[in-house]
Image (cartoon, rainbow, N blue to C red):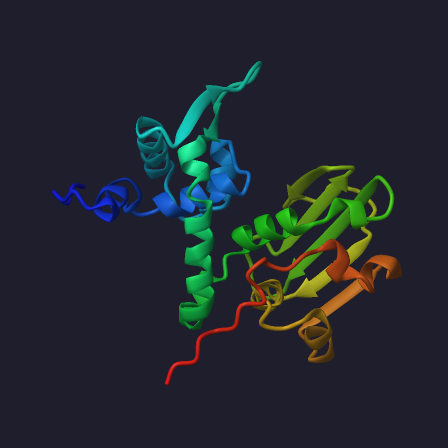
Length: 227
């Protein structure tokens, strides 16, 4: 895609303007480095399109593709030019929180993306002991309604099959309610009071959930008022 213009916005858009590219960069800057990790954060992307977009980013020097030592597959490492896009991504998020969040519809509540974000939001130093198991039961979906996050030290695993471990905290809710909490549109206390969330388990974790599970860094941004 070429615009035939010397404008730097046009030249940047030639690289970044294809569908999925900005979201792939979002995932790379949030810590995703392997193909399957990137797919988890972009559940509707096809493997073929993801491969093409990654190859394009390699071609333009935004990422480096490296063989994983002793394993099959590759990892994708952001370069300086990719990391310099972080303020751009944050500015887009700010704009989206203010001006686009009212456009959310039912199909946008992606449980895979939610669970990936919740995993990334856990503050491991605020948990108790070396291992913590967090269980989610989403009552509004039939495909993958049960999820576990297993935290061992600084390592975290996201599971859709029962890991067979003692659960410390149980969340029973809908995907939408959990998204609304994470996005700052409601709170744990409000959701519990309104019967939209059941949160049980270790009292030290249940009563201090906001200490060890952060909301989105954009949760405090208010939606813009349309006149």
